[in-house]
Each structure stands twice: as structure tokens, then as C-alpha cells.
Image (cartoon, rainbow, N blue to C red; front, side, top):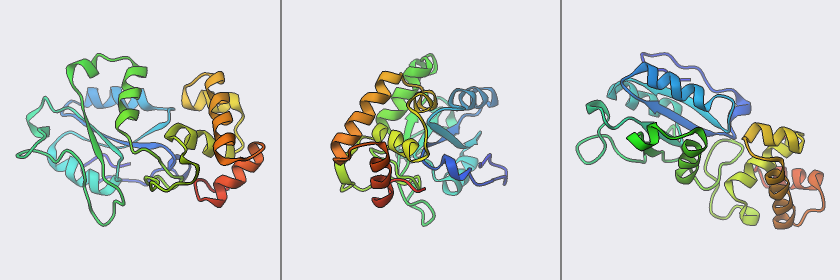
Length: 203
């Protein structure tokens, strides 16, 4: 993980199905708080920065999907004269990031509210390699259905999937039903094999 100041390690391979988040704030306590918020969820904090130069270096190194940024600080102004709002476009990053401003209302939001705000602007589909799936992805699965399917491939039970994603067991069952319907598969095993064939997940 990139932390600025020249220190970086690669994310764990099993985390590549997660939505990758980069945190930017001048205040270390804010960074620590949001890092704790996202720990053990469907989101992976891949880097953080306390100033503009750390942010620009970190973005290129960590290739996030979302930049959660405290724009109330001079270092992190967005817009024509400040930081770009999206689209790093480097050779190393194969997709464009999107920014989510840490407004006062978002700072006081609950975990579910914050997570939903991130999901709303995240890439529509995330592949097993962490890149945005192309519009022609078979079966038109939703981002959540892709995540559930990837966990099915890993052999997770419905209860384990619910705990991992922070959703109810009934919601998981509904996602599994939708996955089987959209992929025209009879059971979880066939759905897992379908996902591997279509490179949505790997064994």
C-alpha cells in the first residue's frame, strides 16, 4: 500500500476484487478513521496522502477506483486550477479514478451511508483483476452480483458472503438467484464455472 514518502507495497492478491480507495486529507487522524471504517469490508484502502505531491505520486502507484478527498483544505482543491476530478490516465493505471469529496455531511455520515456513497460512483463492474469490466460483460451482472459470484467461486457459503459484504443473508440469496437466472445456470457450481470461463473470477 502506498503511504506517500516513498513507501509502497503491493496489495494482497485476494483483495483484487474489491473497490480500491485512496484517502487524502491533511489530518492523519481523519485518514486513520476512514482506514478503520473500510477495514474488513468490500473496499480496500490502497493508499493515503497528506498533501498534493503525495497524492499525485500515490495515485499513479496505487491505481485506485475512488479517491476520497478532503477538499476543504487548500492542498486538495478540485477543479480547473486544482486537482483533476477524475481520469489519471497513466500507462500503469488501466482505468480512470473518480473522486468523492469529504463534505461536512459525508463526514458525519454513518458507515452504511458512506459505503453507499462510494458504491454510487464506483465503476459499474469490477473484474477479478480489479479493473472495470467492459460494457459487454456477459449477462449484465450488477457490481454486487459480480462480487457475490466471485465469492461463490472462492467456495464461500451464503452466510460467509453476507458477513464479508456486510449485507443480510436474504439479500445474498436474492443475488444468487439473480446470478443463476441471468447466467442460465442451474446451481452455484455451474455459476462458478461460468464465471471462470468468462474471466470474471479465477480458481
